Length: 267
Ligand code: LER
Ligand code: MN
Image 1: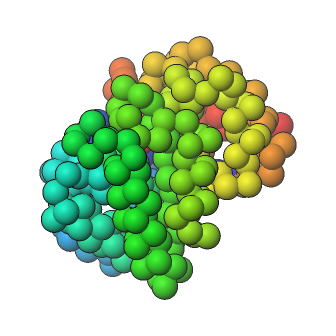
Image 2: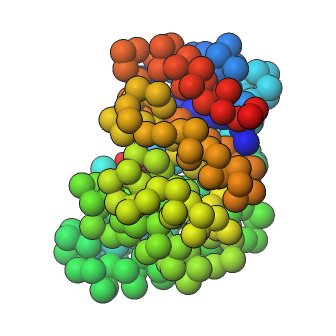
């Protein structure tokens, strides 16, 4: 297993990354000893793939995944009541796929799937998400890119809250669609975090780590020894990617994450 941390590649794409320029975040990640930096991105149009590649490469860091959720705040989602907005979300995801192909990264489908309560209701919204995911998955397959569907807790969306629901949707969407599981959401939605990790192991391709309070691992009440041990026993070899509040400030949050998790990776 390897360690990464989420950084904003376009300004304020997510509040769960430090509000600092990408160059600074990448330097900090390398100094603290991460293996990769996951990029949260608004519109990929604003990024030059060659310079992003150069920046990360200069520090010996990989890009495991691209986060796409910022599109929701722009009014784009796979289950938006207006067809044009759904098409906009599909096009946006395809732009992420193009960048991911250059960086060797997964593309995350989190909040860009939308919310049933935005208008379509659970059944129709689910149909639209499956249709959109299938289209993007086909496009991604042609470019050697894989998608990650992330279950999110009930306070963030009413569409796909549990690992079981997301697993069924991923299987319906295509062979190149897997799961991103996030310990913060799992702590709210799963009856047993380790039980769900074991049940979905065959399709878990990426993991977001945050403690119960969204602070760095070690700052809340989740048992990361047990979580990492379960992932290891299930044969997981991907990234643990910290998606956390940068409290009390960025450097401390980066350092606490590594200090807490690195020893668990060697045992
Ligand atoms: C995205 O990865 C996520 O976990 C969400 O909680 C962000 O809103
Ligand atoms: Mn997450």
